[in-house]
Length: 390
Image 1 (tube, rainbow, N blue to C red):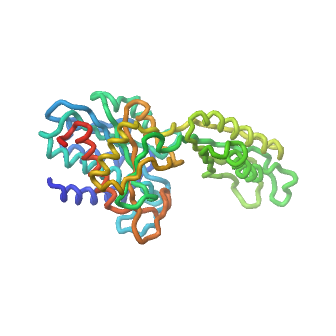
Image 2: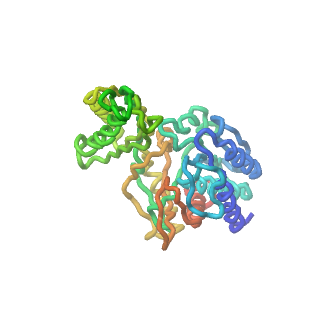
Image 3: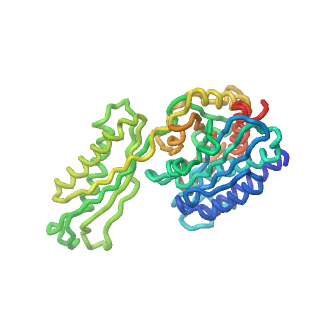
């Protein structure tokens, strides 16, 4: 299959995946689709891991290193509003973080390589991971525990993200920290229920939760050194059954992000102290669950330098952004990088002359060319890492 055919298939695969998004650990249809395509590429093995994860491997005709490429299977619990002709057909589910594009690129890479097996040295592994979005219970550590980095032993691992903050036709690479660490917390505020017309007889858990949302922001503004990057967000509040009932409990949950992994312990203490303190002020109680999630994603400087060189060969020197500021979003790709040298880089996906919506927006979309560039850079990497002739 020639290059243009592979690109055409890649675009179509992305559309098919986009139509049927599934959230973490429920990606059964997606994993079946992926596994079937890997088998048509004549992978030497295709195996299922962690229920919905999929790993395939192409073994070269000559000895060489093992390079793994990893992408994510899961979508998000979002109702899509893009208006695309291939928009999600599943209510309340959307690929709003470009995972559909990442999967399509790896499938395209596998297809392109499968027809060029005589030139391949070593092994190329394709890791399709479930539940990247499910901080703190992402699939990376589970896949590692099931041996995805062994048999064959992975020498290098590569990941990428189509990134709406960068113009299409650019690539961003960092030689160190590229994405933040992230923890998750869940706080249940307990009061005493009562009548909405007689709040003085109740202990209002809604009031406690509301004050706590504001108070938690003081951690970033008043308790952390101003030049230290930290982000704390509450993403969910739930409680109550009826407008005229003061609820006896309200739950809120959110995430804490940091570039310095030592801050995880610090943030855990501060979140617990403030939640319990605010609850006590209003006569209630707070049960705090704080879970350590993903460590910061730290690239190997050596492999990052190779990615930079490959991207410059594809796009030109002026189109590669080296040493860009880390994102405060989190990625469990960090778990792989703790075991194997590698790099996680960004591929610009901003669509020119349109309003660019961010990741996790119901209107998020990206330029198709980003997938082509990602595929080109991955192929170049295989050459520079010793799996293909340069």
